[in-house]
Image 1 (tube, helix red, strand yellow):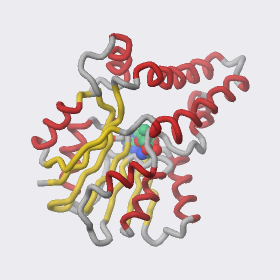
Image 2: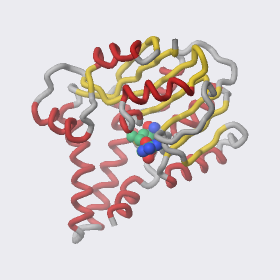
Image 3: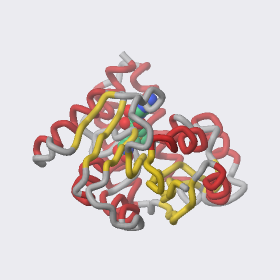
Image 4: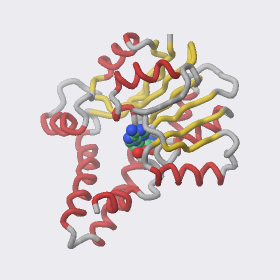
Length: 246
Ligand SMILES: C[S@@+](CC[C@H](N)C(=O)[O-])C[C@H]1O[C@@H](n2cnc3c(N)ncnc32)[C@H](O)[C@@H]1O
């Protein structure tokens, strides 16, 4: 039941986290030119950035995720864009990757490294990146110190590992990378392809599940995440970190 309503909430949303193609482009353009790079997109979701990376790089991209319906969306996008010869949608967990060491020029992860944790992700993915290759992620981060109690408690519950920008920047060299640059995703990256469509979907499903308390609780939780962002968007955000393996 919970799975069913979760699927209905998220089915066919443009993205599964904050982001827009123009910010994928901005981060990609901060990297030096690489001829037809091999890219691993971890936690690719429905694959918005996967397809954009393929277009930008003209290289080979493997998108991995564990939620098959998202991968099916990505597979459809790959087919529609005629990218089957160089883009793959693979059901594989970030906890169980069997790629050979040093096999990717770039590892990319938009809004997904929190699942393994920022520091652990940086350390474990290091071996998969070619010498002097790149790691690009965006990660939920405090934008100001001393956040108000309500939002502090909320993120402590849902992502206890959330850090400030200086804390993340300090960690990066200890994990084997140098920082090329970083920038915070602007508010439109949260609304246009993520929270606006999600909020519309929640409203619609609320009517459909009016007598189903379990479904309504799940819908409330999703709405709460959006309401928190409305109230506290100045305090946290997702920050792109563009790194090079040293
Ligand atoms: C916040 S979403 C981001 C999706 C996508 N990058 C985007 O920006 O639209 C996080 C993604 O990580 C995926 N995920 C969850 N656990 C995972 C795991 N163990 N391995 C790989 N992906 C996972 C989820 O299914 C989801 O698609």
